[in-house]
Structure formats: structure tokens, C-alpha cells
Length: 127
Image (tube, rainbow, N blue to C red; front, side):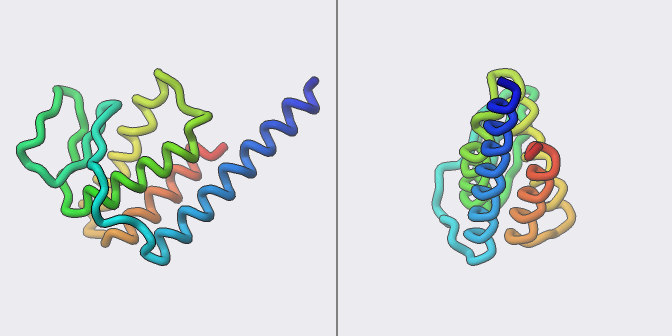
């Protein structure tokens, strides 16, 4: 029983690593959309619309790269979906927002921001 659980965890980890590697390759090659629905949910909003409604407690990131960053976030959701639940999604998404915000404030370009977020999420959530 324990061996079976360990094998499933190893396969889950390998699958996540494979998906992260593929996602980084897409980003490095510029194969991400410039038009994509902006993200809004789990106390995080990524938008280029300064008139976007939000609730108190939402982390709102205004950026010209809202589409590409929203796409990246949805791709990360796909990678970590099996690890997310109704509680920890309120940690996962705002944490991604905080990483994006820190990178944007450091004047990183879009590629640097995306790869920074990917590396930190892999480091902190990929276990």
C-alpha cells in the first residue's frame, strides 16, 4: 500500500516537472498569446483596465502584459490543479500575484517576470 502511494507521488511529481519544463520552453520561445482573457478570481485580478471592479482584499495588478500573465497563471493552474483545493487556492493565486508585482516593480521585462514566477512557484509548490 505504501509503495503504491510512493509511486503515485513520484509519478505526480514527474508529471508536474515535465509540464513545467514544457511551459518554460513555450515562454522562452515566445509561444504565448498576447490576447487572452484577463484573470480574476481567488483574491487576484490581473488586468490592464484601470476601471476594473474589484473587492476589498483583492490583489489587483495593472499591467500592459495582463493577457500573457493571465495565460501563464492559467497554465500554472493546469500544472498544479491536483494540488489545489478550495482553501489553498487563496494562497496560490495571490502568491503568484505578489511574485508578478515584485518582478514588475523591479522593472523586469515580460520574459524575466514569467520565468521568475515559474521558478518561484516550482520551488515553493512543486514539492
